[in-house]
Length: 258
Image 1 (cartoon, rainbow, N blue to C red):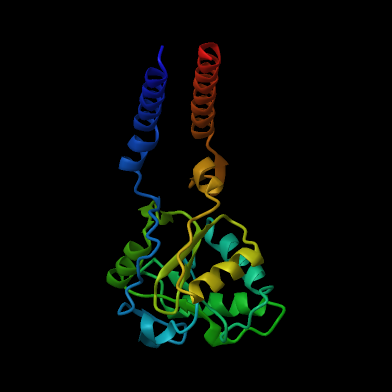
Image 2 (cartoon, rainbow, N blue to C red):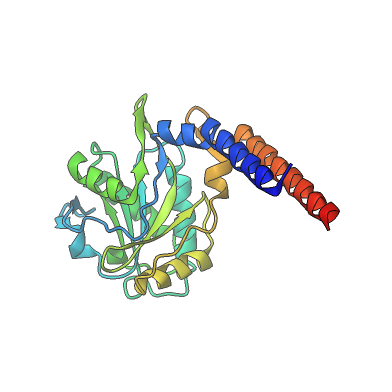
């Protein structure tokens, strides 16, 4: 078999694997993150602060922002995510309100500013250092404005049995509203968040360097936890094995020819 035939076989194998796993799944997935790095938040979207004031996003986004989309009465990953975010921003070597801001927006239109105020008070009180109230916004809004924001950042979720099934991530936003970086996981490294904020300040767009959790884990809405996705991992390992095998064959073929 010629080298060209080997390469053709590799392409066909990759295509078959992608069509049977990734492509098919992507076409049917309606929960997760469809990254829109370099896009912009709709700064004209109106939100309600924890004090009950209605403002536009452009009125509160003045610094680099860490944006997280949750709903406050979530029984799943929202509170662990917020707890980890609280822990991480509490340890940033940056001044809240001066160097950065945090925005938490509920994508449940049934929640109001009173609920946001309750959880804001709880999380700010758990921090060791003084964190200005105007440095972390806990917001609510209506379904129209929720759609504007979630569509802009590619946040896809679905209501199910009185709750929402959704992914968890932090989005770094520039002062001009540009989507700079996505940070995945249910725990956060203060250094990673700090670098994301620095990039956002510079209006720089960075690729997502760690998607392992998103790829290998699926959210189990019944168990309310991330579970290891064996099918995806096994499929990836099989594909990797096939590619290594074909590369070895090509190498042996070239060795014999020389």
